Length: 80
Image 1 (cartoon, rainbow, N blue to C red):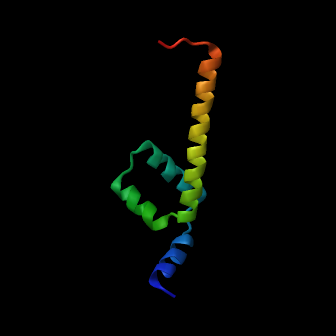
Image 2 (cartoon, rainbow, N blue to C red; image 1 turned 30 degrees about the horizontal axis):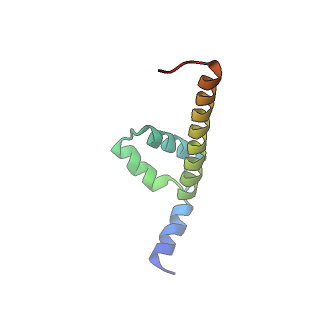
Image 3 (cartoon, rainbow, N blue to C red; image 1 turned 45 degrees about the vertical axis):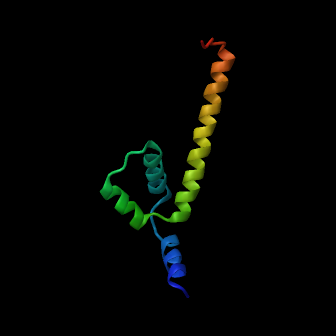
């Protein structure tokens, strides 16, 4: 087996909880992360969980924006 396949298998077997992953993804959306925290995340987070948490966070962000725009339009607030 190649080294890349071994690295991927090892990364997918990491044991960080999904809550820890969600917190790391939330910090990344906010754009603030300490160097030590980032290094810890790289060592512990499961990349599959990171992708799933990122997609969920992006979907929630878009849903919130749609709800805010819908609320503003329905309230009749005049802009400009």
